[in-house]
Length: 169
Image (tube, rainbow, N blue to C red; front, side, top):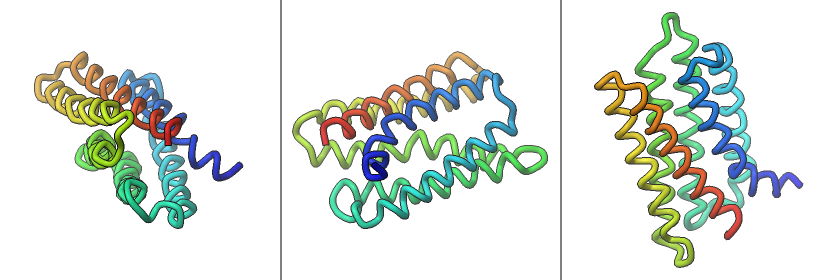
């Protein structure tokens, strides 16, 4: 059962995480709740990296294992940034943009290795990168709608890629 949770857990957790990010941007949840979410996610990522190490040492899985490890550090940056008074915008940006872009690396690598569903990984990559660009543009122009659209695009792109990987492979 634990192995099954590792295989299909990300397909549930990725869309949940991006939905939570959207809710946090709408200020529906408190900053402390976002901090707790970072801690929980960090623990889950570290546990996933430790328990998946033996199974994730070759091919695309090796790339994804590395992304999980780097993502654990990125998530810790977000948690630390939220606990500083006032919140540290640079550390929060590392966490947000890190998780927008890191999966794009895995999607590019996975897309190069597979034949069936290659287009899904191209869409996942595009969702990550275009979504991050839209979000950054929204920050520069102080356009909340653009930031929201960027987050939705990242979430949809990453969800498509992780769902395909969980179901197909």
